[in-house]
Amino acid sequence: MDQLLKIKAYANREAVPIMQDEGCDFICNYIKEHQVKSVLEIGTAIGFSASEFAKVSPDVTVTTIELDIDRHITAKQNFVDQGLDNRITAILGDAARVEIDGEFD
Image (cartoon, rainbow, N blue to C red; front, top):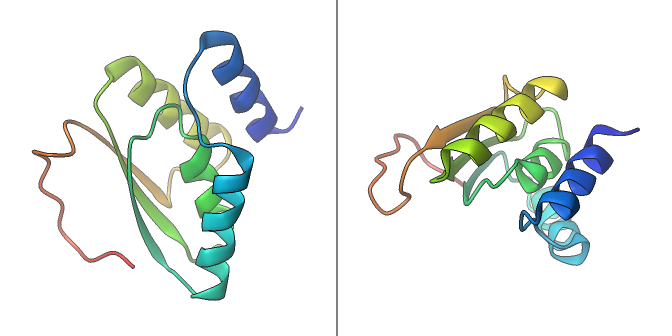
């Protein structure tokens, strides 16, 4: 089974909110059309949307912030399982308080 399908199944089974397909498709198309290279996501959950964003192009990087430790750990493992851990930076913390260096598209 495809990794993203596994993540969706897990989200459904465990009642973890993830981005709906239509919203994710919209943002992925935006990333393509506007040649976005650096994405900041607030609310990682288990890493579904960050994975989708990173898969748009091999030169897209994602920084994503999650407050829940268990979801953060699951997301990080999902990124490793997909070989995306080198392009997705997962930060554990409160997005209102986390300080992030860099600029995002």
